[in-house]
Image (cartoon, protein in one colour):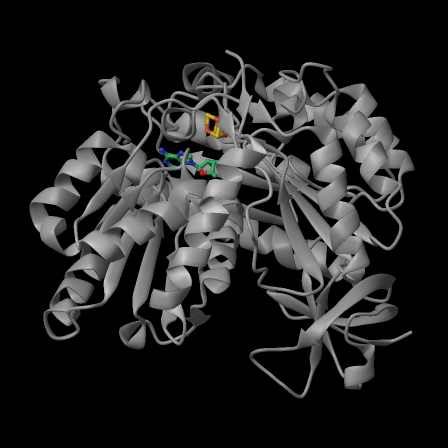
Length: 465
Ligand code: 5AD
Ligand code: SF4
């Protein structure tokens, strides 16, 4: 399918609505609830950018906000309960604060059964519902909602569009996320993402580089490249370009200290990409390599397109080619049909790879996915018991991995004061692990050498080297 990059004219129309909103928004406040992944966080930064240009200012007290946006995620079921609870709370608030505008967007808005549920339970209180493919139209929809007092709903099934140059208000002034592609073509059998985010659409490399050069000019030091499957970047471009080639170009941007990316898919991890990671100093040597399951049988039924052995061989190859490489991962337990033996295969891979950290999930049935229709669903009790064992193993390895850093010297971007202990400065080492240390405010924003002194499970401590 041809990708339609939205024209400057279409984006200008939205800028016009931003202007028109000023008379309504100036002096008012907004709050955004963001659920889910970094991609959603990045999109919330765009919503915040548009709201700010309209004249809204941010409040961290949602009850006092004039505009409340719920940017939703539907990857697992617990998010549904959470959002319905939150909407119920704001519905009650709106009874007294009648001019409060409630907007809902993100992945759940692309699920017809969820939209129906919202209508049934909160229909008259939600002023605005829009989906993932038309986020750029937020100014126009909000303007219509505010001026007509009529509920606006705009959800597109079509996913062939790409919007550039949406205003953005970033959460940090040192670290920035840059979405390089949207959508996913993989259809892992448990995953709802391809249904709510559509097919893969890569941004033009010039647009990505332009954004990153701008960030470097503004003093940003660390960039995280985002996409559902970053290493299939560029296949759909008129002039195809690989993710490895894109990374090389990004490394040439002066001023950027570190480049992270997530998430790659093991099946698309080319030798070319491994070489770029190995040779380019700025590219992180901490690779997020989603495993999902260690059992070849389960992987097959998940439609992951690699075996346990292929995954382990990839890890070994990277260990040989990339000095000091570390790994993090995503794992699902309790996928339909997972036997104790399959689960032990997952534990086996965890023991062998020795992840620095792992996001562990209990399998959650998603309406519309292939796995939801599988008959051999696992009982909740079994899932719970397995995730308990897995977390215990992951945590025991985590401390051992931490221990390896003690005594070493690591380069760290100083991000600011620690939220939990303002006496200390905080940053992250290469592998993404938090490190706290004492020092003056003049160090904030600088890249410094730290000697690691101690590991405290969830963070490390260090001193200036
Ligand atoms: N149930 C549990 N975990 C899931 N993930 C994706 N879909 C599901 C599901 N239905 C996990 C995967 C993915 C991460 C972002 O979320 O591990 O990598
Ligand atoms: Fe979901 Fe698989 Fe695509 Fe990741 S690669 S978004 S898990 S379908």
